[in-house]
Structures are given as structure tokens and as C-alpha cells.
Image 1 (tube, rainbow, N blue to C red):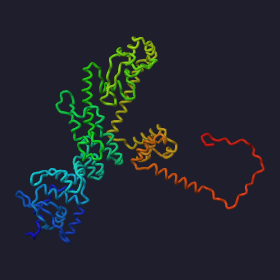
Image 2 (cartoon, helix red, strand yellow; image 1 turned 180 degrees about the horizontal axis):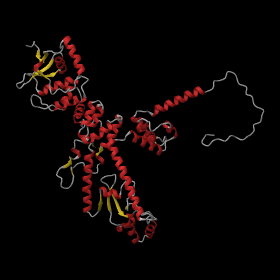
Image 3 (spheres, one colour; image 1 turned 30 degrees about the vertical axis):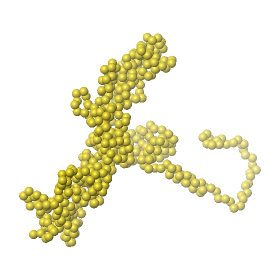
Image 4 (tube, rainbow, N blue to C red; image 1 turned 180 degrees about the vertical axis):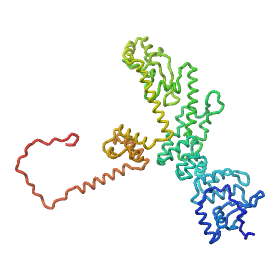
Amino acid sequence: MTTPGSILISRLRASKTNPRKHFDQAAIDELAESIRKHGVLQPILARPIDGKGKPITHEVVAGERRFRAAKAAGLDEIPAVVRTLSDGEALEIQVIENLQRADLAPLEEADGYAALLACTHADGTRYSAEEIAAKVGKSKSYVYQRMRLTGLVPKAREALEAGEIDVSRALLIARFPDAQQVEIFKIAGGPYPMTLARVREEIARRYMLALAQAPFDVRVPYFAGKTSAQPIGPACAECPKRTGNAPDLFDDVKSGDTCTDPACFEAKTEAHVAQDAEAKRAKGFIVLTGKDAKKVFPHEYSSPRGYLRTSESMRGDPERLPLSKRLGKALPPVTLVEHPTHRGEWVRLVKETDAREALVKAGCKWAAKDKDRSAPTAGKAQADDREFQRRVEVAWHKAIREAILEEGLTDEAFAQVVRDAYDLYDIDGEVADFTADLDFGKATRRELEAVLFDCIVGQVYDKDEDRAVIAKLYKVDRKVIERGLKAADKAKAKVAAPAKPEKPIVQIVPLIKPVSDKKPEIAKGFPK
């Protein structure tokens, strides 16, 4: 028998849809002790369910802590208010009731919103984000962003649950596809996490690409290869990863035309370059892309190997005319090479040997003379050995770099990098004094990071803009520093000023003539 307004605890079960999944056992035990002394002061909310032949007849909708504590206290029954509720109505009560408590974990809140969005009303209509936001007293953007936490990759989710990253960092990670989340988590978390402002800056730089600068057409879908029937992704204008198509998720991003999926952006760029290359080959051009292009034009600031730009002049040209103008219709066949950094752009090149022969035929005798002067003097074997050693060095560097990408810089490796940078960069003397006595082998990571800062922007008058960017991230105001120094100088001058004498001081002039009338020499660099 149960007393009126109570339910046998043996007839109750906890709700599977309750957003709160973690309960503090110490708090439950404390509440159980209170219940033994005073009883359950506030009834739980329950709803009748089909026990499917089991003795369970009701489910706890709200008050699971009291339910658990009552069981721990050894009670047979618990005060309860019973209502007939649909799954959606029960979940709505659970979400709202839990949100009124300050200790609800962000992931529990996110799971609650997501579960509620998947539910339906009694009339069959679905809950909307706007409706949920209105019921919990939050903005629609807040609800969307919290729900996004349910899509965190396992490592980031575990870190958030363990308190290793805060919800602000987790929200930044959750906005991106899984592959990018893994990379961004290394930036936002890890043993040496960046400031939140720096994390935002790094994410924007690495993973948020301006569609206005895309080399491909953002209005159409692209396919990987000629035979693929599956598009790489939807047209950018319709893609959900475009910030403008998810304004509630990217409400802090100014431009709506920003791509948040670099892998898709790169794949579309590759497809566009391949299509464009085929079209140009069909017109008779020689076209080099990918690795073939890198062999000829490895870097934006390097000279093409064995080739000359048609917009440049041949070395030795007395008038320095571009090859295209100097040779006109006699210009050798043009090779279009993919630009090393500006994807989708082509550099017009001609082989240097072909250009020289064409110039000689056109009567430019200086071209033949320059050829004689530029003839290689080193033997072929020596040149081959030098090229092989260069390849070994590059491969060695690549292997070390890949190890760093996999494992990160160890403290010892980081100290060595900073020590090398310290020896390489020209740091102003007063800045160098800050770390003059530093033992690199015993320095902490933070000390080494500060030294690296000195190395990069330690030229006091040359790096003001870079220093200003970093100062803004750390909220260090230059004007405050300037005012402080002025005040200190003023106070110092006041202390150093001699007191005004009450009586005139009689100065005794020596009768001895000075040994020399020569004025003392003024050291160079000091004002006269």
C-alpha cells in the first residue's frame, strides 16, 4: 500500500532521456542522510508508462536526484505528482528543469537540446530551434551552437567532459568537419594551449577561406576526375559549411562568403586546375601542373629552372626588353606552369635554350656571347654529387618535420630551435639583456616562448606593427606604458633636483692655471 500522493520506489524507473547523465555521489549520499531525518520535502514528477509485463509502472520525469537518494535512504515509497505526458513533453520538462540548475554540464545541455529537436508534439509536429530557444530563455544562436557540441570528435568531447578545455574552445572546434576538428583540437588544447584570442586567429588563418579568392566557380559543383559521378561537394553558394548558410553557428564571422572546409576547398581547386589545364592543352599549349610544375617553378620568389618568363628580358639584353616584345611572333612555344602559391593562375614560360636560339636567329649577338659566359665550369660528376646531397638534406629535413607533426616539438627540441633562432636573429641590446643569463638547457617552456618572441620582434624600431598585433592579443596598451614611463621620469627628476640654497654659496676660484686649455674630446654619438 502507498500513501496518497506517493509511488512505490519499486514501481519507478529513471528516465533514459534525462539530459543529466552525471550525478555527484557525495551529494546523493548527503541528500539521502537528510531524507532519513526529514523525509522527501518536494515530490518528484512521474508519468505512467507501459511496463511490458514488468512491475515498473511509472518513469521519473523530474527529480532523479531525490529518487536516487530515497533509494539510498532505504525508503519504500516517495512523494510524487503523476501526469500523463508524451515523450516530447517529458523531455521538454526535463531539459527546462535541468537548465534552471547552474551545474548542468555543457554536453548534457547540448544532448538535451538535440534530443528535444528530434521529438514531436502530441499533434505530430516537430520542435523547432526557435521554439526551444523561447522555452529555455536563450537565443536561437545559443541553442544551435550548444547542439553543435554533440558533433565533437571523441578526443575533444572527452577533453570537455574532463574540464581540459572550456566550452568556448569546444564551440570553436565543433563548428568544423571531423578532420579539421582533430587538427584544431591540437591548437586549442594540448599541454601548452594558446590564448582563446590566439586560437580564434589561428583558426581564421588556417581553416576559414575567403570564397571571393577561390580560383574555381563557387556557383557550380565540381567532380574529382572525369568519370566520377559523385560531386566533391555541393556548390559553395548552397553548402552548409559556408558561413552565410549557417548564420546562427557563425554569428561572430563578419563575411558570409567564408568556407570552413579547407579539404573541400582544396579538392575543388584541384578539379578546377585539372579542367583548366585540359582546356589549355586542347588549345595547343604545353601545360605543367602538380609535381611537374614544382620542378620547374618550386617557389614564388625563385627563378624558374631552365625557363624564362615571357614577361622578363634575357640576361645581357642592352635594352632589357621582355622576351615577348623582343621576339614577337618568333617567340618559342610557351609552356604554362601552375603558379606555386596562387592556385588556378598560370605562369607563361619559355625554355631558356629555345629563347637564346631564337634571339641569335633574330640577330641578337649578345645572346650568343652571354651563352659562352654562362657555360658551366664544374664537372658533371661534381654537379651530380652536389644535387644528390641537396636531395638528401631535403629528405632528412622532411623526415624530421613529419616526426614533429606526428609527436610535436619536445621540450629539448623546442629549446634547440629557440637557441638557434637566438643566435640567428639580430636582437637589440636592451631586449637581449632580458635573457642574457638564461640557461637554455634549464629554461621553462614559457621562458623559451618569450625568447622566441624576442627573436622574431626583438628589433625595437623595425617591428612595431608586429608587436602591436601581439600586444593587442595580450591587452598590453602602449599608451599606458608610455604614461607610466613619463611619470617615473618626472618623479626621478624631482628627486634628483638639488634643493634651493637659502644663502648664496661663495665660489672659490683657484689661482692655479689649468695644465691645458684643450677642450675635452666628446665621444662619438653623444650630443655636444
